[in-house]
Length: 263
Image (cartoon, rainbow, N blue to C red; front, side):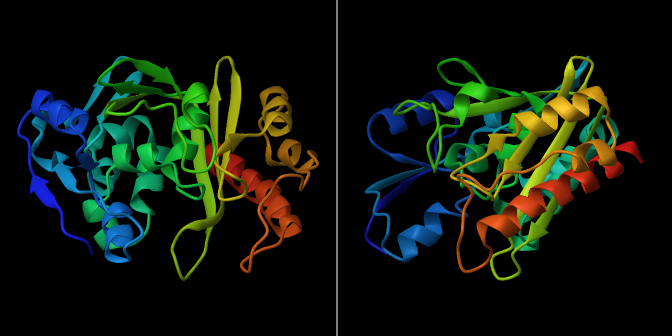
């Protein structure tokens, strides 16, 4: 690890100033600190956001859940409002990584990092959530832009994520046992307007599947999901799984998610 300076701002305004001056924001550190230890990343200054109270907290208002960017995975998993109103999101948070990761990792850090196999981006995209930042509000459909790429500007910080609460939802994944990241994860959310399906771990970033959405909007059943042919074009192939295997997993996990959502 290279030398760096460390600061822990107490207010959002101070954090914004530090980041604007070139400091790298530190949320849960589950990716950043590991890359620094390997000398793959060498920020000269860190701004630890854990002391910024404005970035914490979970609240329900009407049919919306707003989760502060610095909310830890275990906090989302154990929050009474999330468990009652959006149990699929609580389940997802409770099954990220291991206990240590869930104790330190944050929803804002995960979404800002946009790892192509991260769990949270699938929930954000499938829910049609809104990412609230220090500069604006960004729709999930506009936020995720590919491998570790997002719509965030330089110096822009996520402050919260606002989730519309679906009628039904579920998340299913097949975990890669060495890393605890999903080989493939599928989040299904049903709204009055239709169904949204987001896939993680299978491609160059999280993405929606139009064929599954169309079929499930007509008939929300596992059989409807099974009728959709999943094409392997543009899917990942690596030592863990071929494109054909990942394509099959998308179909299977979608069927399981729908069955879970139906109870």
